Length: 98
Image 1 (tube, helix red, strand yellow):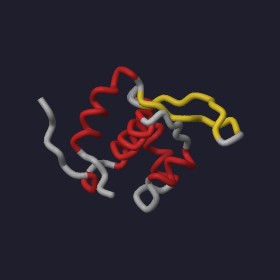
Image 2: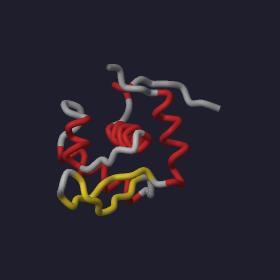
Image 3: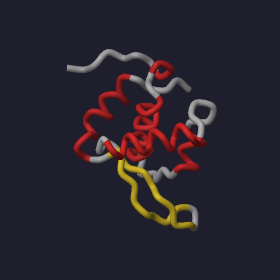
Image 4: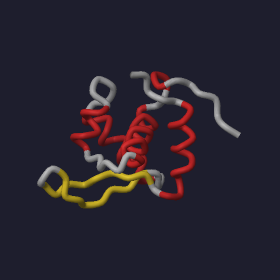
């Protein structure tokens, strides 16, 4: 059963982060804090990303690992496998408008 779409603007900030990371992950692209801030420019501040990162990691939804990105080692985010279907459903039902 699919959940009802609430629209991108009504998604909670932590879910916006998850959907963005999931979509980038599906495209084979890494996401780190700076890139996430670029992708969500005007929607989330660095402080909001940091607070949501902590919460999502505590809940087991988000993980991060060291990777080489743009010539530097940085933490890159990924959606944990156990919650991937949930985030996929949210992403499919609440796409960001262009």
